[in-house]
Amino acid sequence: QIRACIFDLDGVIVDTAVYHYRAWKRLANELGFDFTEEDNEKLKGISRVQSLELILGWGGVEKTPAEKLELATRKNTWYVEMIQAMTPDEILPGAKEFLQEVKAAGLKSALGSASKNSGLILERTGLLPFFDVIIDGNVVSASKPDPEVFLKGAEALQIPPQQCVVFEDALAGVQAARAGGMKVIGIGSPEILGDADVVVSGLSAFRVNMLDAL
Ligand code: G6P
Ligand code: MG
Image (cartoon, rainbow, N blue to C red; front, side):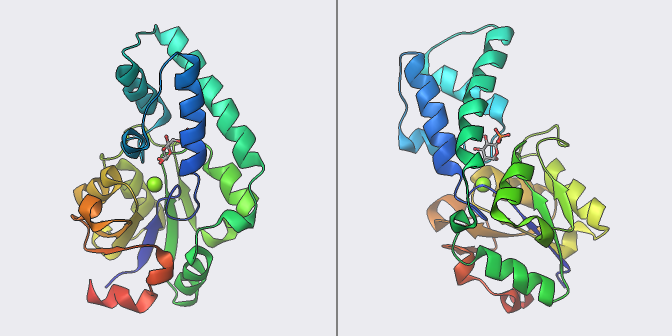
């Protein structure tokens, strides 16, 4: 019996992946190289610092820890400029309706995101009131696929992991939910998220009563 839903943010609730991609691409270009949209898939669900490490590796570029900090900050400044202009129009199709359905069904809901910018995004899109608990990159130390982010969510909601379901668009996130002993709904393509209990194209294709079958 599922009693709580834990949602990833980027790619599940809002389409911020495109902004992350634009900002990282700009940084790579300034460093004299480029990376593909296919490579960009590997950045989904991965923390800012780990994303930078991957990108520098693709470009064959080496930097000192102080330079890395500066580069990550530069990328985040561009990213924040873009998300500051976000509106509720950028909520992914069906996401708000599903959050309303979850509340109406008496289930608890938590955010489980690697992002340190989740507060700003939820505020800009007006979704803050839908979450009982917010666990994000500001309070988590181990990046997905480590289950820390989701286990902290379950703990804060006071619901056992076995009674939680996670909604994720990233492979690392599906793995994190599994490692935490939770059910998981993949949002995206079955080729990438095949390890999830169910894969749907988006929250518009999911209903609370489908949780009964898990
Ligand atoms: C999410 C996104 C990643 C991003 C990470 C950190 O997991 O899917 O692409 O790198 O959050 O986001 P932040 O806003 O803290 O840089
Ligand atoms: Mg995501």
